[in-house]
Image (cartoon, rainbow, N blue to C red):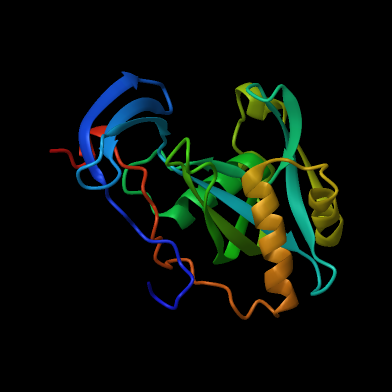
Length: 221
């Protein structure tokens, strides 16, 4: 084991891979996998997801930053949730920062001149391969009214609000905010700010566990 504290890829032998459900956004697959050589294979079912980006958009003076949150209905959770802007990586080959630019434009009517990586997270690694890259966007400017994106479905009801970063962090710690990428992004932004943003990764930083692989791409024998 390396002295570095880091997750790493580990491909166990997949004896059989079955597609259980083909969905509009994600699929459900079932793998029969050999956890250790010579042992009886086990069945693991999980969601194959294209991945996503989430954006912590900050404005304001150092130490008094505000973060943009959008309030959106989430049907699976039956809740109105305050979240940072986010979106799927559903354009083949699209760079995560370009996806972040698109989502910030479409959901928040903003463009940013400064981009960095705050965190990479697997939101529920026992149930899905969904990987989210959380980006920090600064040096913001508003999109002119005539160029703004027309939102549809749940996004049409979005309400945007600027909140002091410290207040948003307190809401996470109080159990008032529940979106996983939002909580990680806000806490990571506050931690990075406490270090003068010195440990931020660049926008093209390697994404080690970016594994939104198609089920048929899983190695089998």
